[in-house]
Figure 1 (tube, rainbow, N blue to C red):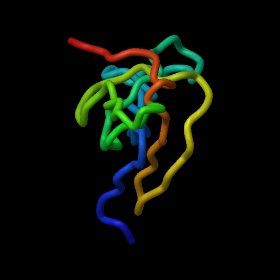
Figure 2 (cartoon, rainbow, N blue to C red):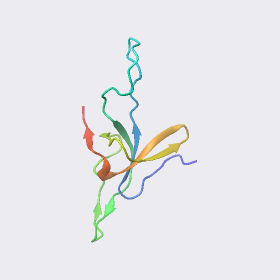
Figure 3 (cartoon, helix red, strand yellow):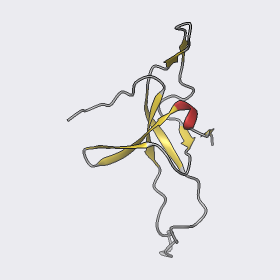
Figure 4 (spheres, rainbow, N blue to C red):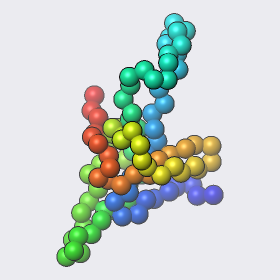
Length: 97
């Protein structure tokens, strides 16, 4: 079992943010409520190379919060946790407080 997964090329490992299923007061929320499909970057690859072999770095770093596409990504399960693996260009935006 791998302790740490390091993505290759321009891939990014993301842990999806799970939205609460009920409010603090106990009201159950429907699954279709409008909330951002976001996640936290866990690991990034070194980047891809262009035709002249120059390294194109990944645009996000570990710890960034990112906006995820509704579909896509490769599911990866490490131990009890589930992650998603995306290409850098598939990530839609970086979220800041």
